[in-house]
Amino acid sequence: MSFDLIPLQSVNDDLIDACGNDPGQICEWVYDASGNATLSSVIGWAVDKPLTILIVLLAAFIGSRVVKRAIVHFGERLTAERENRALAQLQKIKGIEKIKDKVLASNVLQGEQSDIRTKARTETLTSVLSSIANLVIWTVAVLISLGEIGINLGPLIAGAGIVGVAVGFGAQSIVKDFLSGMFMLVEDQYGVGDSVDVGLASGTVERMTLRTTILRDTNGSVWYIPNGEIARVGNRSQVWSRAVLDIDVAYDTDLRKAQQVMQDVAEGLWQDDSFLDGDIIEQPKVTGVQNLGIDGITLRLVAKTDPSEQWAVARELRIRIKEAFDEEGIEMPFPQRTVWVKQEK
Image (cartoon, rainbow, N blue to C red; front, side, top):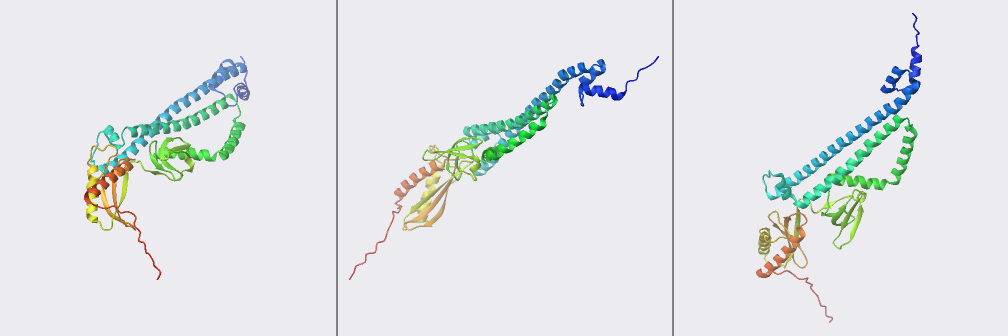
């Protein structure tokens, strides 16, 4: 009996010819079973590589779902932290010691409009982050799949890098706008319905995208402002606002009496449940003499109000203070001028 010895190097070379330098399990198994290089190559390409690609795509699908769920949870946490900070400030203002019901807390905080705004902000933020994550995950999955097919990815990646650099230089301002919009959403600097001052313009936010903020000013003009050009934001509508009134009285006025009248009027509006145009959330205060002017003495009154209601409260206070001054005989001065007449002798 004789045995034919097949060199191991020859077997390895045949396996490499049939299945490549990195043979798959199925191709190698078929080659070991049949010894047919052509059959092993065909079955390996038809079964092994599609199976690998399927596993990669399945992993990408599962990964994208997991990442999306994590992003949604992250958005909910951001929203909850923001509401808790705002609620803590509101508790200090109104003297609320403890609110256990989260639904009640949300309604006390800003009402139904706040719920809509918070939901819209969270949905926008999670949608953008999910889209970016999906783009990255599926791009990696496609590149791995192309590599499994045998496509040389070197030139493709190099070309994509060159195109990316060119686009990056040409679209720096757009990228800056999108990044600024992302941070504005994350930090909740302002939302639809807020009255803001962004330096370039001021007014009410009508719409906000990742690239632009759209405001309408008091004259009705609509401003389209790229988010990347907004260097500072003044929000007049977060948690609470303040109505500041400077009232002039004549120099011969009893200042203590005038201040008491203003204080009584302000407290009356504070306790007036029939006034529905605005809500004073803390006891108003007359701070005293603000200025000794040319024509009269300026007294200042301040009152904390619900967000964006300071103007309605201030208008009502002016009406009531004028009526109270008329009843008390307190004069509000007119512009005065002293004229010297020189006569020639």
